[in-house]
Amino acid sequence: GAVVSQHPSWVICKSGTSVKIECRSLDFQATTMFWYRQFPKQSLMLMATSNEGSKATYEQGVEKDKFLINHASLTLSTLTVTSAHPEDSSFYICSAQRPGATDTQYFGPGTRLTVL
Amino acid sequence: AQSVTQPDIHITVSEGASLELRCNYSYGATPYLFWYVQSPGQGLQLLLKYFSGDTLVQGIKGFEAEFKRSQSSFNLRKPSVHWSDAAEYFCAVVPNFGNEKLTFGTGTRLTIIP
Image 1 (cartoon, each protein chain N blue to C red):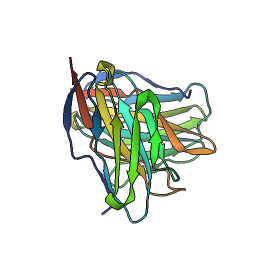
Image 2: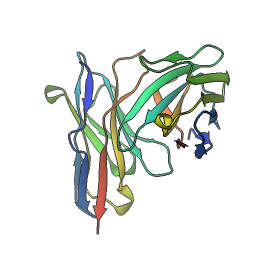
Image 3: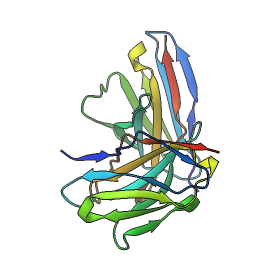
Image 4: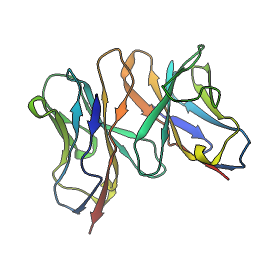
């Protein structure tokens, strides 16, 4: 199967600090990765599409300066929440696509961010 | 507006009973359709998908879904649920080939009672 990991699985930080979340495709190379945000008891909302070696494409309403995405290699994408505030507290989920198999996304287990 | 609707927020069924989770979509053309399951501590897992062809799709874990164009629906079914099926289920669509973005429904939480 296609395994995607995320690290950390949960993180608590103080307001004003920055937090980095990693998303790795463990057994395949992912040219495209996606970042989602999920509020409690709600659906997943796409934040941005990340392509290896290029700038991420953000969805409307997502602050690119707040949520920095880097896709430096074919197996790693990172999401950095800068100057985090309590309203950024959420469940962040990444997914990855295999090259040539864009019909299916493989999801990571998610990262629970709590900003105090 | 294009959307995916899961009318049932929470469903409770007895173990061994049959299950049907509803999903309706509103798109101009038939989108690509997916069902995912989300369990605590685990990533979303793809249960099944429909692109074209046979409208009855078989998936993993004994699930199946039927695409009905006339009703713009893609309901998920299982003839006999197990306690391990308790989870959150999401219907999702990709509008068309080449557009990779998944749009998720609001999800249905499934509770299994003994």
